[in-house]
Image (tube, rainbow, N blue to C red; front, side, top):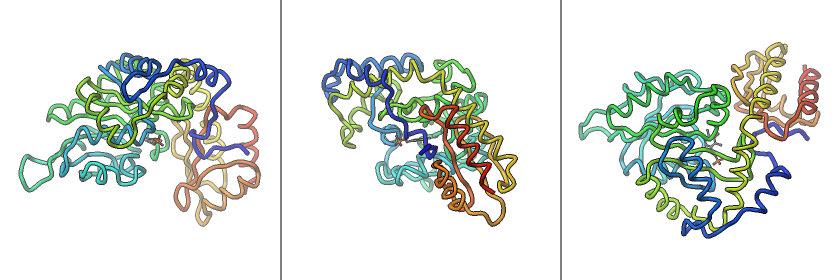
Length: 338
Ligand SMILES: *Cc1c(COP(=O)(O)O)cnc(C)c1O
């Protein structure tokens, strides 16, 4: 089976496993795992932040960040398509007691004027706006890359009224590979950043949260409260360090293969529309009357797994374990479907 349901299905490579086996470890709850400390320091430095915190998942990294930034009763501004709102189990309300103000703009964009319009005035009738969250790339937006100018303007607008600007950068690697932006300059725009190691970079697990020293100190406490304090996780951090060095540049291959799938779908008689393919995610809308589950099942019969993304939309995600030979098979499977 060729699995394109998500880029989380990858297995650690031989070289990654070797790096994991060789990693020095310690108890990370005491902050004594040298490999975790190295990963945290390296990412903090490269993104221009003071400190980092290794977390079990992207969801936990985001939820910790929100929890540190807001108090119960506060409000979080985020996009209608955002992962923190759609796919984290209602965690903003459940973990932090905060309400959400949803922004709607094409493909997950958060323009400065749209953010400004959603900030509540300082008046006891309203919830206190406490945080602005952006996502890059936008998962539900078809892997859309945020414009750097728009991010900079959103950051300035948020900070001008004293609001921290958080990045859900689970897929930031794909964005950075596409734009070629310097990681440090990119990182400066945000007050906190969560980065996933287990998506495009292909490690078995782990995310890193970045921010200033006080923020990370508080995040360390919140991670413990949420049950995310782990022990000798240097083995996972080693996979992350290996992946940053060896799996970042090759993301271009994932993007090229996704573009090829998107291209074929654009010309397909049973596909109405394909969202612009900017990174490694392809989302296609079927023509009238064709159902997503029908296409997903037909592809499964041909040995290809993709996922229904709503009643008439299907998603493919390319990744580390998907090569050019697999690409030919996927293109063939799509051509035989009518
Ligand atoms: C996958 C993802 C997450 C959450 O990551 P998990 O490790 O699955 O919890 C958060 N945000 C975005 C945009 C993602 O794609």
